[in-house]
Image (cartoon, rainbow, N blue to C red; front, top):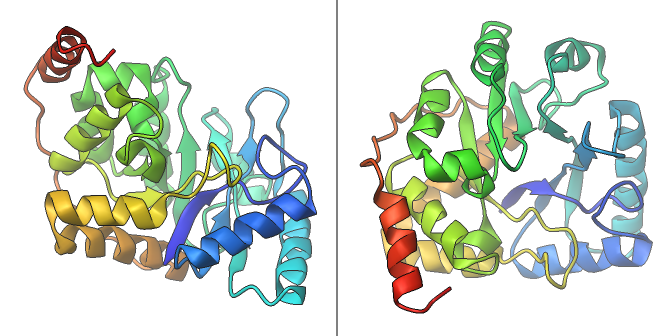
Length: 264
């Protein structure tokens, strides 16, 4: 199993604080059946500016540490890039990293509250340059929660989307979970990833998530997400699937219903 979004690199963002926490995360990943972790420390968000060469060097250190403890997990260097206008230029110089070297996939994080006005133009330009933006956890973006069809329009421009395992199983709130489920039902999600920061509150939940997805949507959906993550690792093309339109107001009505039932 491949985890394409993870904060296992220690001491550079709000993920693992030290080598002990990084090792514990690697052990937990192995216990979840994960063989490959794409390390995605935050980049261009607040105090975190983690450029490519620094990440590559630290990834080598973490892999040496993991091997010395005989944990069957390999870590690959990348970033969770907070969207910004010069990302294409930085990808070309190595300041910004794709999810895998020589592969087109780039993990892009949107601000929590909005989708910037230049997002569609940037994604169009990325596609013209051969890059595929992978939107991190769209189910937690306020604008996309209110208008998931906005996400569908970004997918039509060539973007792919990654849902967080902990959200799918309800570890980060009922409303985010309901949005994630709606996005999965409407073919707006292409990957499941842990976005793990530690082994406590921001744990992996990958096994639990895939069991849940199999129960709700069937084994074919599980295989689709797993195969797509493996294709990222191998730099292979992911088949386009057109998203389905969401009926206007559906999620808002669902939220109000939950409040009426006393779930909030």
